[in-house]
Length: 418
Ligand SMILES: Nc1nc2c(c(=O)[nH]1)N[C@H]1C(S)=C(S)[C@@H](COP(=O)(O)O)O[C@H]1N2
Ligand SMILES: [Mo]
Image (cartoon, rainbow, N blue to C red; front, top):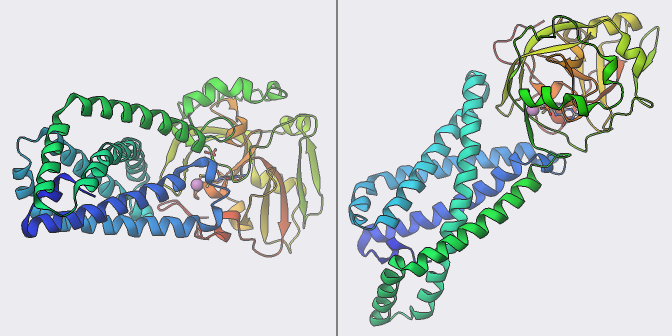
């Protein structure tokens, strides 16, 4: 590929060419793996390899940081050579800003549980934003250069005279209005294609993320039948936590099960003396409590001080009268695939809840409604959505994500353990 710096001669030109080539491949691989890691629509299909994919993405990121460090000694001289070439100089500035931004936020994300959740969520936001700017930019960059590359290749037969001619063409082309038009057209195509791909990748049911405020405004349509049965306690209306802050990313590994009040049921069974089943109206009548808690996904995002209202798990277990030989509670999602488990000591924590409302509104379907588990002191992969039944068992059960490489220890750092 003939880039601006390919016209440099000498040692530095050669090094820059090599660095540029490696950087291009790394950015491509990072973008590919990063988009797969991000895309809600791909969670289920990629579940078995997600942990390895994330590890691979991290190592590619480390390699990319190494390239930046290798480039650093050339920066001053390189910038000097680009003086007066506005297009190329601004390209360099943009690329460096992107790479540095990705590196810093990536390292913070990599540190994971050794940094406060607020750092992780800031870093995740930055990492994503840079990607939504950087990937279209990289596509644009390669598209606008490729025409010149094609011309250059046709002419570059090795002869010096032809090389010079190609270079002259490039200089003219670089400044021409045609280039501007081409760039504009390529930008348009990239933007349209990019947003279509983005919308597909982020589609889960019908959306990819939902802010706490949106939860409140959409809740009414989310549970068309039965939501009127859940009248919020005074503590959640207005929410005693003051309203949740943050954005839930909507996750499912299959689909979003549809809530039908007529067929919905909830059961506690297994090693219990009194197996119990509720239909929706009966479940909606159970005494509920309200609590304020934070919600942390291990990938870096958090939602703070949501007011959850529901039935404390320990009260449901007490109603069913757990037998002494039971050691674990296993949770089944109505999606038919997702499960998790808690030891009975963990299940006994006061804030583990089968929640039905958030901030005084019924939990919307895409956030796990009508009822989901909430385990505030553990990462949210323990918080099974569309909770359908709880089975008491005498041995541990490895949950959906732990089975696929997530840490079995899901405690949020700093959280008080049972
Ligand atoms: N049934 C089911 N429950 C689930 C998940 C899932 O994919 N399916 N994802 C878990 C993970 S990893 C997180 S971070 C939270 C996300 O909750 P949200 O989709 O309401 O934001 O749900 C947890 N519970
Ligand atoms: Mo998560």
